[in-house]
Image (cartoon, rainbow, N blue to C red; front, side, top):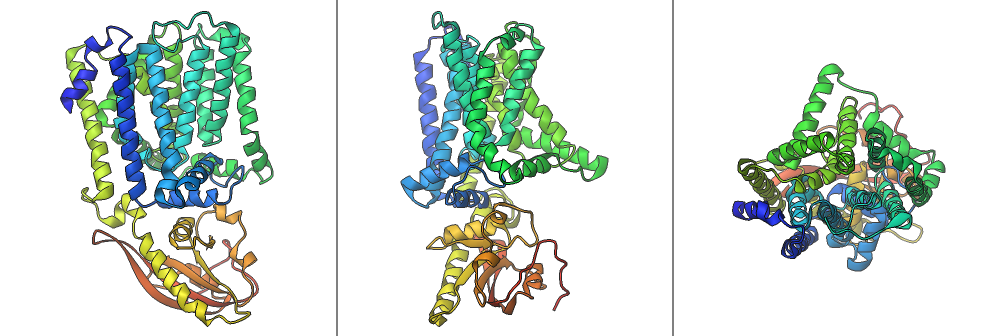
Length: 538
């Protein structure tokens, strides 16, 4: 493996921008990586956040409590092709991740030629943060894809040719306007995927302000056209938020910039967590080389193009460093910063043999780390107990679904004419969405939301609104030694509450967690609320 990586960074490969073999090899690498992701995506169970977005896709709207709607549209498109399966949920997000890699290739090709494009594709693909995230159906996939193409479109609008040292010919104002139009569409789609993508156009504006060669772009129509187009693309999301008390914007602002906790020590801990997470997910050696590439692009960029790319790294990273002073930053949030960093590194390969050797080692290490995670997803090889393993959260839900379905079957035959319906629910949105996905008929499953944070289920019809008097509820909760707080809250709302069987969720013989099924019969009038005090234990 090290020999292969050493070959693709050999200076001989970069002597001419024309290297069709390198371009073709890069494309084959991207296709191979996509096939591996699709294979994993088809066989690995869905994680709770993915089933949550699947629930969104069954209730399409222009906005949701947590995020804009593009991930729901992609999931809906995939399930129309492959049904309500893991592959159906992940199919289009995986292709979106491939689209992001192709944008990285085109940016690297425009600035450094075919060999740089191949190196960009390989570097971007082997990083653990990309290798892992590219298999999952999350808002990051469409956001990164749209964002990468937006940056490429801005480069083209600024006059960068499609291929290094191969001018497109006189483009003129119309040529630039076309690319600004594309950039506006892409930025609108990125913000329709995840609101933090606004950091990219902010970074471009900052680059135009800070670099003398780019300042005159404010006198051209292109950037303003891009802003207008982006706003038009995003308009349905803005209208939805305006009619829903700006719930999505308020949630995200509080999620990342809420009141700080933990004092000074908490801030230090969060900053080290952020730094350590990025070093681990980019891989330690590549992290060093990318930081070095960003630094050089800020210091040495006569025309301002590489400076602009560097700013699309620096501005998001600076924002998340600030965010960590207030709240914990999830490891995937800064992923947008590494897109342009890969391009900068691929188009400025280290000049000394010693540094190139370390670069190749960095690629090999990143690939090895990604491969370990891929294998661990299939067969647990990382020595972590399942209860602490993030991968294990996807497993065991099929057993829960089968158990709940059998429980429903025992209750339904008791129903006669006029007997109330049997409903299914859980306390957390993650559990509710997993249950809905794994029950054979994919019914509406209610999230009670009596103890946790608000979420999309709060915006949909609640159990209390749908179920009539005397209804029966099958409720799946964490198995606890004492009576669950949710049961204590609901004790006033049902005539009878019984603890039923417990289910142990396992992966390869290791216990992930334990759930308890509760049967709540005879719904009464009235309902508990999230801010209601807990009744004493019975």
